[in-house]
Image (cartoon, rainbow, N blue to C red; front, side):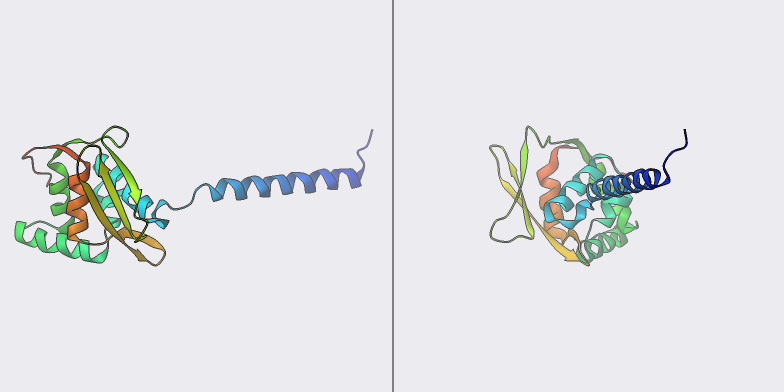
Length: 158
């Protein structure tokens, strides 16, 4: 029995549309996490926990990178090396489930607060650079590192 050419065209069109819908749904779920201030902070925390200095460095804004570059010059290291050194001092990270919450500031949408359970709130200011949020400056980095650090050591990473 020979298939009807009209029917096979219809089936092909339906399969093509189904594939297009599937692809659009799949790609919409793969949005860049850096598109929101809290996503930026989460991405940095993950990079720090994984000791991925390239990812961590790329999440820093120009002011924060300038700070680490200056710090690196003083330590005779690169800016990434200075950042790596700071993160290497963290021997144990706080758990986001047990120790703190990540809350977007309602008054200033570029500020993310790390609210430690039974402790202080650490404010992290972000900056939107061409649609991607990044950690703004030295103060924000210090607050972020203080918020995620459970224990520190003296080890150097670079």
